[in-house]
Length: 227
Ligand SMILES: C[S@@+](CC[C@H](N)C(=O)[O-])C[C@H]1O[C@@H](n2cnc3c(N)ncnc32)[C@H](O)[C@@H]1O
Image (cartoon, rainbow, N blue to C red; front, side, top):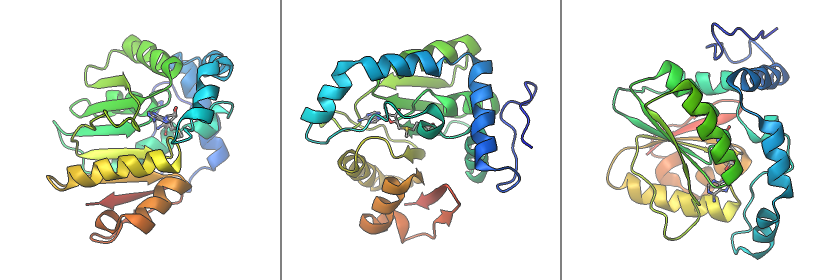
């Protein structure tokens, strides 16, 4: 049974040594311990008419995951810790979370990878504010969250070593970002962690430069792709 331990809130455990339900339950306990008030914030997001209107009017039919439970919306901390352990993260490198939710990955990097830079891009203002509030309590100088619309034409994605993509937005929004990544990969090597059906499916079907040049590593919930 996966137990929450405040001395080691993001434990590194083997995949399969706990169930997914345990991981989600554990993650909710960690959220509480970190002071992330997902419940109140999500209620505000559901009531914010702006997101409902955008969903109807925006050509990309954006998906902000509002109304879904936060365990569904976010990756459990134990899984984040495991993902990071598979990467060869070096001091000075940068990892970007494309649609960072409540900034869970920022907390794990802030605690365990203090020499790695983390940028979380998130569109939903309420989540951005809550992420920034909680991250600032823990003071991680290498971690930042920016309010951004990844699907905006004017948005220019930062060049980084690693990108974490968990089904943010609609398929169209993910397609747009994959084109941004393709452009960046022409100038440097990148690693993309794909999580969720849309992200993995689009990478596998439409982006052979990422899925077929180097052998990806597949895990139950995510895959790691190399340009
Ligand atoms: C499935 S959640 C993943 C959260 C986090 N990466 C995790 O794994 O715990 C996707 C997030 O992407 C955000 N998102 C959706 N469309 C976006 C866009 N166009 N620009 C930035 N963020 C977006 C959503 O608001 C949501 O918080």
